[in-house]
Amino acid sequence: MKHCIAIFVAAGLLTGQAMASDELAKAKNCMTCHSFDKKIVGPSYKDVVAKRAGEKGVEAALAGKIKNGSKGEWGAVPMPPNNVTDAEAATLAKWVLTHK
View 1 (tube, helix red, strand yellow):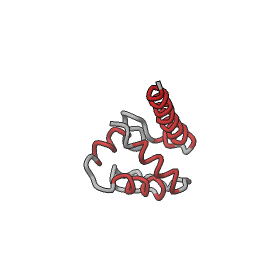
View 2: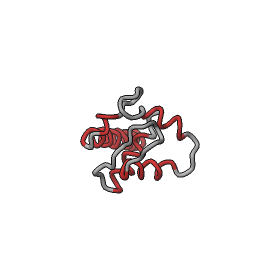
View 3: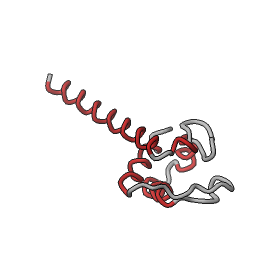
View 4: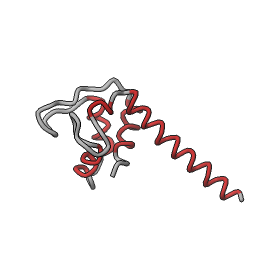
């Protein structure tokens, strides 16, 4: 019985974390330019994951791009720097990488 409770608690924490990241992405306006599965202004999250599959240090690199912006990697339209903390950028990077 204790194991079942622990599993439900862990599942709730994971769901809460995913929801928090989903809400963070909305709060930081990520969803204005990105979608889960289609290009809007920037690439879809699935395209980012596909391009970065197997890349070492991808989480930190993506967090840096989220925070500092990037240009030229996905076309002519640059991604501007985002007003996020290092922790928020890391959370968003982890969340983006879950979209396979």
